[in-house]
Length: 480
RNA sequence: GGUGGUGUGGCGAAGUGGCUAACGCGGAGGUCUGCAAAACCUCUAUUCGCGGGUUCGAUUCCCGCCACCACCUCCA
Image 1 (tube, rainbow, N blue to C red):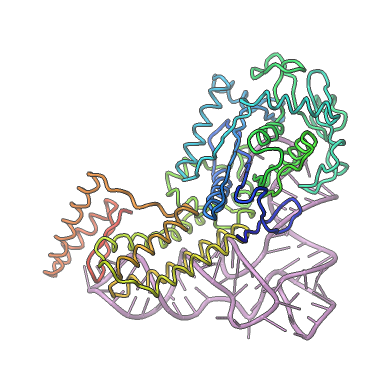
Image 2: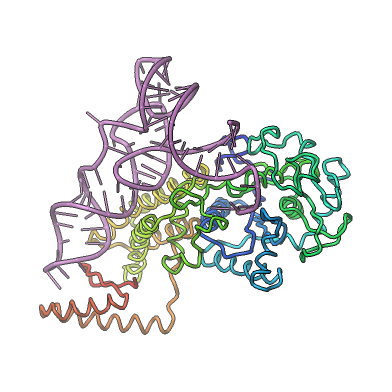
């Protein structure tokens, strides 16, 4: 395969060559679970979901690890985010973590984001983190002060290579307490001494404390993917200091390259400003899913290249919705025609069109996962599908099935925007029967030119969310 | 101040050294329909932030400038 990716480490588009042919190890920075996930998370994780789905579609064996951060993030005030939340609602820290970790998975499941193969938690990997910190101290890359351990940035020659920062350019840290202890302002914490009021604490060789934020990803990536692995993903807002620090720690501790390819996703913005928990300008995934189908949120998430920002607005969501409706309308029509289509009949010409769409789709996805263009390929195909299906000529079942398969694979398996045909329940069958009865009654009314009655049936059904469309070969319905 | 990124039609957005600058949304007109809806067709950027340069030719390469965003402090 000829997959190319834009490697942020080096800032150029390069051929993607897995470390082990046929296998891809990928690590993506996961959320800190102290609140419900918002659309910014949705964009990022949908993007990486599609990347993983496409790698698998390409025949690669993917091991996908995404952490859950449940300890270690400090606020400006030196408070732990999770502890702060716990105090606010009078709950144990691990209750908070559990609540929002579940919420996160609920949201991702709802969005059709496939679960990572491994979702390790920082709090469950304290020994691994301690061990890595000990290694760093032993090798002279870290030092202990008053029960805390800091990474000596000056000892890591490559520090800054991902974000193109030089240590001397960095603004000095502003945290008084931290600054006093650190040898250099740019050094960062690997382990923090726990003050008496700090509930989340573990024993360590340096006394009771808790791990710094960056070390978890280094320790867990190493545990599950090895010292060197293929892809590290994350959001642009974590490129510095988090990702940069991960690299420094891991490469110093392991004497090996860390991730070989860095794929960094652009932020979701609102009115041009980043959507974030701290700014409070966020829309939760749960809220968004009350108004839009998960497939529409996915369409929105891939309206720009994964590395670019996407701006949220009602208009953008409506646009994504309308675009999705057009695509799915063709799929729905294909499926409904399959039920009554004549068997046999090859439809050779259209098979070629489908093969062309598939080839184009692969070609654009191979080019650094160009999702907007992949959607465009499906939109162009949809024009031809609609033309065929509305041409009035009989289309054989084999052709319809080939069309359906193409949508299922490219739009369904890879992009996750075409839901599989749902098996109808007995309730569903009863509903379909009742609607068909009304359609038959309306047909009779129309035959009698009793349009007042036929329009009444159509309007009443529309009020219930059932839309009727008259085609030359009969009336079809759909639930809006 | 430093670093990274972006600037393409009413909106979102892809893209390329030169064929008609994708695709979607929106808008206008048309076909079809009892009317709709859906679909399809046509139209909707002589132009790609601004100024130079390289070139036979640049939106695409180079330089400068302007604007916006992100990061440098917690955030995917």
